Length: 78
Image (tube, rainbow, N blue to C red; front, side, top):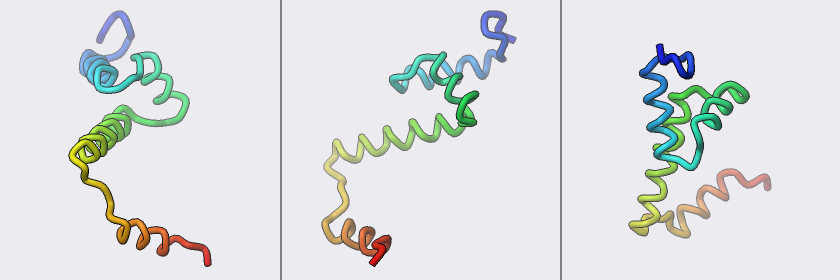
């Protein structure tokens, strides 16, 4: 156990890595998990997805107008 936080060293390291990859503090990550039921694994996947999307955008990988229209038409309520 990590004496300072009362959690395992593995979880503490994962929280530190997640905080380093995001704009969240350790406390915010823990608060999100406790208040909203978002597991650490869920938060790690979320941050990875966001980072992947940002990298795609940096490369110019965007949906085409036709792809966007297809999605909008699929979910249109008309």
